[in-house]
Length: 227
Length: 245
Image 1 (cartoon, helix red, strand yellow):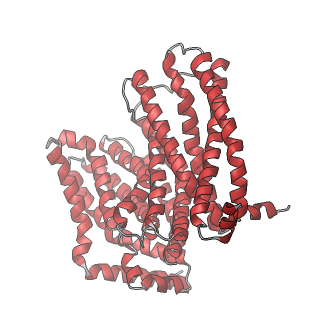
Image 2: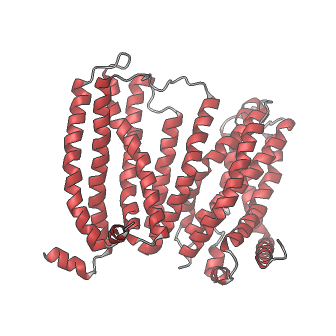
């Protein structure tokens, strides 16, 4: 796979995106800080009682993580469109869907993965028992993967739009509601000590479906936006 | 098979004329059927054993809910046709249908909420049907917002079409996950409004209303597509000839 021209192009794009992200480290931290802040708001607004916080921890962490990952989505193709890289990608002669997968993967590595890594610490602070931490991490990893791939469609559609940020959330959030339902539910079940395999498997199925179909829609949307 | 009729539909002057003839043909029967259905539903049908006269809002609620889903599917199909065969008119149909669909979705939610107040005791219940209808409204609003925010009509058409197709793929997933969410969350404290066997007296006005509402949608849609064609083809020569006749 990596030996083929398309595979090499994917790898190069992925590496370039990571390199660009690491050159601007402050921006890299923004979604994580946002995630921590949103989660901090809930104990302040509701109550510092761990027994109460434990009941809503799954939902709070999931909503906060989705919003944090959504924050970084707006600029997914913007810089490329402004400096003409997007046109070069369209002209590259490689399947655009594969390039979209590489870009989606880079977005997940830059925003999704740090959120997954931070989430256990926040979960402990909300009184989540240690036994539920794995379920939380896996569900968030799958959920941010779904967000990255469905979100890339939205980002590609709104790339040339003024003030696209609010519009992007309007487009993407309804599509993410199923993932939120299963993800938050899985964490909730794990916190209560039930087996959370069912919702996790459904979440994984959704992630596979999104990873398979969304890059094609992203490619179509990029072609339309670059016309 | 001869496909010329299909290709002919793509021509704006041809479609404009057909739509002009179609609109009254759909609109008058719709009016008659809706009036008959309303009379049947509000006067003829017996009061419900449990719900009394409150159930009569069903005759507006159910057709609206049906149309909210039917219009989204139709809109996505039109958008797909527009994308695949590059038929500009199909995009005009999709964008003309979207606001009607959004209003019917709103109407279904509003009547559902009005119905819920006397029956369930609250304006809003996080019931699976209501919630998935609400998400459907969000999908409509997203489609309209995306179309409105891109200035170039052709680009806006095609971007919104991609969104409509993504939405129609997701709609079953949303629908079933919302059901699953609710069933897991709580047992059905609200049974789906006990209508195991609806009597014929109650049923026929409902069917009449369903057909009437659908025809009404067809009439409004043809008029709206005509308006959309007028807006898009405002500089075309055929339009001047057509209007001068």
